[in-house]
Image 1 (tube, rainbow, N blue to C red):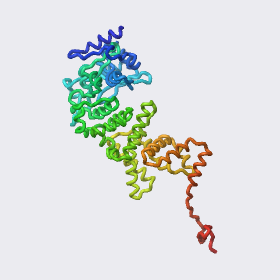
Image 2: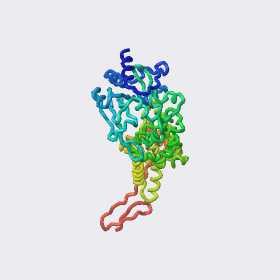
Image 3: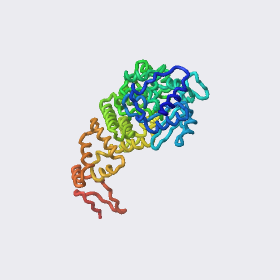
Length: 454
């Protein structure tokens, strides 16, 4: 009761202007025990020190949709320095937006200070580039201004754990009921401020089964090129969220629909116009979605290897046509594709290395004689490469018999493996040229035996 009273007092003290629509517990049913322990600790600590503190954004949206949030963010009127002083295990991060990460055991909660509106313009604290993209924004303000600065109405909801109330400034609750994704303010201006919002719109629409409101959708295609001005690391982070959302297949379909795919994954639009390439990519995305929904681990390297495979194949064939041997041609193709991709997405090196190993194992699967299959089995990336091979079989790129053979071989006992290898035939022997002493010459006779002159 005390915490609830303090929450109402300290949350209400920040308002000078218009007030939000406040939805009590009985209208939404979100109990405070649905909030993570760390987020509760953060909000309670701030409120005890007479600061406003709310769970905000995606966590509130997902709770109202009946979903379990992956993480919890907190918004407050305390400055980053004040938040940092209250929590021993915390750190201030960010240049574009200064935030505080508070750690509670393995859990981390991101705490942001309420952002100011346009009236709080400060040349030293806010800066934009020539396209309107915000480069730095550390102007603090009220909760009302903070809500207006957020992107979509469904992300501008505040939940007070003390009172168990949802505060709504822009009819986000109504939009959630209508399954509608609507931008706050001018969509064109908001996309210019942060072009990544266009990707976020597609991700949220696909993963939360929302329809993008017409005015929010209209500028996307014409502004898609602004994504080229965003640091590749930020684009990669947003694309990774999109592809690991559990609705990657639907999200990529939406990317095509909104004209955002071209340039993010170079030539992906061309691949998706080819029956074999489209089938392979969609199988990989659907497989990823199924694993995520089943709460199974997913490898980002495997996913990006799948998305870029047909580009590697095309480059591989092109380089081989120039007379380069198969293996060197494959490695040159990998480097070429990843170099082009790095200009758009900053794929971390650890993922790039794993992707190369998955790709490099593919031409080794048809080699099923001698000790070669055993060496493939012992490779640390065998399982991922095998799963990749099975996708190739299912898409029709390679014969299903190859995948079936490897499925049997990896699970067979040693005797059965030897029989399978025998059926493949003995390994082809290399012809060895014998060296002879000076002055001696030899030539094979009709029986293939060597004899010396003399």
